[in-house]
Length: 221
Image 1 (cartoon, rainbow, N blue to C red):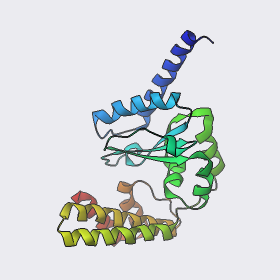
Image 2: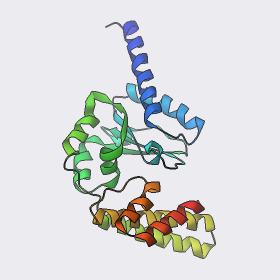
Image 3: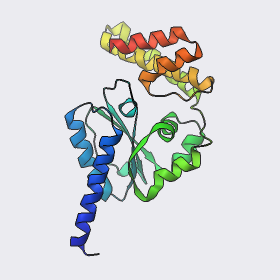
């Protein structure tokens, strides 16, 4: 194939990626986020270090609110990923060779991505292979790790309370309650969904108090 012949095929693949993103992402935090993602996917398609881009979080979930866009970027080497996302896009990078081990150890981000994520770019079906390997034996997130994160968030919340920073207190309270909710669900054998869906999942378990606390904290943001 000549370079000239390859350009239309590359352009067609890029258009398909952009359309996949539009289909997968139900709510965009800003118009700029959509423009940035389209440009990033074009760069990612040409970048041999990037293997896959997966959308996760509340922006791809039906019937819930969301105020940002969460992405996982699978790379051969995360240190070579140079792209910087805008503030409304939370982009996390993962090394492809470590994915299986992280899932096996209860890594909640990749477990969530396997269960609920939407691939926007998947070179050589690398992400599809991960999903196939784990889809029917997916572990639950580690509740002990979630509780440790909750404790850390609570300590930071208390420091912000002493400093009189009410906005930061509210934000760390959301983080604290979110990790507590994820730990509660994982302990009960339930895969946590996106953050806005957690109160409903907690109510199904009968944990009304934690559900109400998280809901109230989210309403304050």
